[in-house]
Length: 428
Image 1: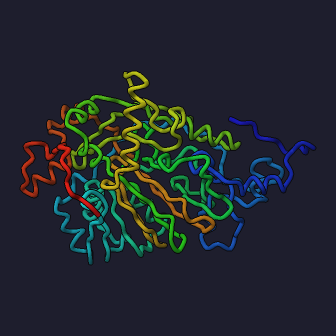
Image 2: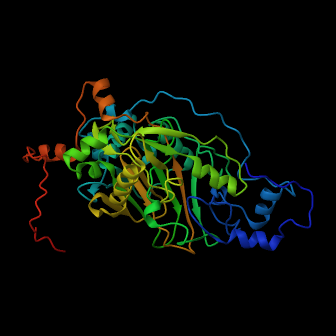
Image 3: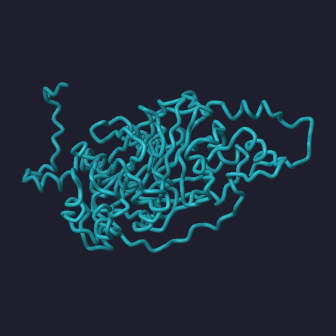
């Protein structure tokens, strides 16, 4: 851990103005922890802020007064494996209970994204929660607007899907709820395009954990009039778009997912890391137990260099081959718009997505406005490879797109793929 100064005064200690200046510098949203805010204590949701005012920032880093810090110096033990019940397996496949309660169900694209209106999330029955879990697993991400659900209710709903994750490096909100991941940015933190590329913002949450998240929810409680959208991309669709030979090759691979860079970023800022960083090996293609569908499972987030991204390398292949495969998959995630959906937030909008099957990316186009959201993050099962899924369940893992085409009565004898170079005449 980076050294933290004591309360002894020193002529070499940074002065107040320099710390204020540091708090307003540009930042990389992954590498730079949220240790600054605009100091507006009249802000209606200030109890859920993660940042601190300039005065509190000085106190936290230099410990010269007795203000309560928002990055508590705690030490958590390593996470142990926990049993997780896949609630989607209890759902009515037709989701009658959930859909009958809705005023409207609208799919955003054929591949990913559904919005439901007319439902109060606070009133969901257990059967409706199970059906929501299945819908999220199938559609990747499901949106609701005008939701008055508070953070405690959001956490209770999330617990229906699994035990809640506590992040090792993100700050604790003023309300002191350790299971909440706070997304906060205001005019004091200006994104620095020189420190990250847009490709590097695509990620799946904490894939380095032994049991990464499943049905995750994010509620925006304050945001700009426009901008600050989030995009999601389907790992199912990425898999479906590959040639059968490449699909089979990827199914046999595993990759290392690392928390090290995120922990290093916290320590570089002089902040504690509450749980030591780990690296975990997961299959490159995993099967979602809720659907039985195969999904590409790699995580480009953080930095383009292999020492700074979440998915660092593919195990057991030459580095050049690993780099080429990961680069190809990362670019498919970021650049294949057919696999993506974009959501324009409003205050009290909430999204539920399945981290096992999608990746997502923020847009940092709203500065200097404020954007503030709260995330609840249930653990899922250990990622399961195609081989292990089929051995453990006796079922055959499926290609989502082929299953959809079968339901539509279409011929899938050629795997639904035609790689002819003949011009299609498609134009828009």
